[in-house]
Length: 371
Image 1 (cartoon, rainbow, N blue to C red):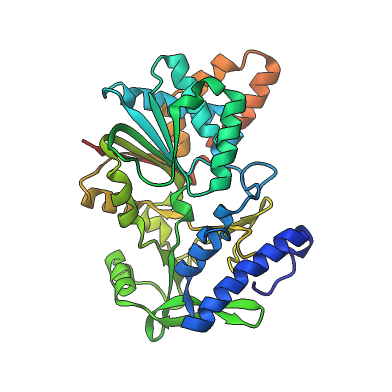
Image 2: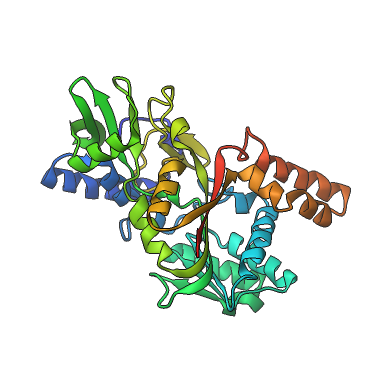
């Protein structure tokens, strides 16, 4: 853990003990190998089997968890996405959908129920999730809400055995991928790393690797002294792995982030790392180890470039607000809001999904097409 006290009143004994176990795992590796890349720190904190944030049985998503996602805010989100999916699915014989990181299962349920009403329910809806706890919650939730569609859902631990035509959906997946941190110093670019001081973690610097230097050079930006940010060097390998799932179709990526010119804006000189714990957002990833979410905004220019290098085509890029409005958000709201009370409720949900001060502009939608 890192020095800090604001969170102490929010932690119960179980959470504190778990954070200590994860921290000890990291300290042990630092003791053995020296300062740790932040990418490795983030990987352990989020994904270590039986220890990482996404691999243990705490409630993460929703008002009782650490953060809220668009599918939890409103069923209108899934309805709009289903409308887009209908157009894509209609172009293929026996298409399927694969959702990566399905959270509570609410998005999967909403899409399938909407597609059922539209008469284009796919035979298979795959869910690829690394968390056994989340997969169990998804199954229980869908079985309770719509047992009749449970037989169409297949939970996966790894990629499908056979390729399919259709759609891949990744809603708030890219932001949780481990990133590498860099800083420009008087001696050149260096990598920001994690060191251990007794019971606390702290930041350090070491010479940037050739890979990191190459990635920074590709940005072609003259960063000012002391400028710090991050690079996701895993984007291209990840895209390569998931585009192999489909023979033809589209990949829908929804996340918060920017194009490169805005991502590395001179005023954004401390990077984009954000952490979430019990509905509180902050910027210190070195505390609450293993019990808080750690994220970095998405560089959509890098995603688009990686996609095109794989032969994929960027066929859509917009804010979340634009995407939802283009796919019938207001019409859908008018259809379901049949009373003044419902109109008020759904109007507030629409505001959260579309207003610039909420999710409307920060969240982007990028669609990649594979012919």
